[in-house]
Length: 269
Image 1 (cartoon, rainbow, N blue to C red):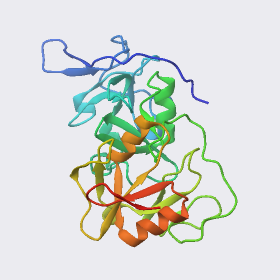
Image 2 (image 1 turned 90 degrees about the vertical axis):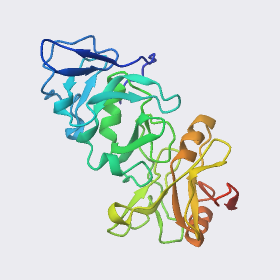
Image 3 (image 1 turned 135 degrees about the vertical axis):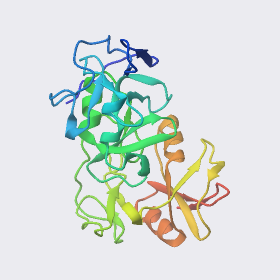
């Protein structure tokens, strides 16, 4: 089980080293460790599922921008405050990271924050490793509840519609993933991935629509979380579904999701 530590966020430090143009991003807590900046670490802690991490309480190596093209290895963010944490991620190591926000992650995934409005699907092993490196608040489950490392409970039975997953439900269609599973929500819903992926929709904490509403004839499906700060994250990362499909799933899941129109009014359940 990953360690859960109380830590304080800090700010990134960017330093020019030597006579050339090499620039290294040092996440807080890295302490300018002695490991090579150009490479990575072969340790399982610093490369979970092939995704390189940097900094943190165990001092994973810093990585040059050239090693993580375009954005470098920068600090993950607290999932509620958005403040940078003690360990970072080489973001380009996450497959399709820039194109796949946390609205259609697989059953084995969690979500990691790069910024308050940037939340990406990653294997849960990445969130476990970030927790061991001190960034214990970087991740959420795919329903946007705070990630603790606890597994999704396997309950018997299945709500009686095709688009619900988890428990004894069947697999989603090949072009879909089972998203929303967590210790809080043992059943999720099937959502399209890749070219079939749904559209992200966004509300603020009071469900006032921000500039990302759903198209006509679709509703915004938002996971319902008990913690108000987690709910604010869930509101920012809803997914658009055809109106009747959204309402059917909301009813089948017992209110685990709610469906909102473009004005922020709930349609179900």
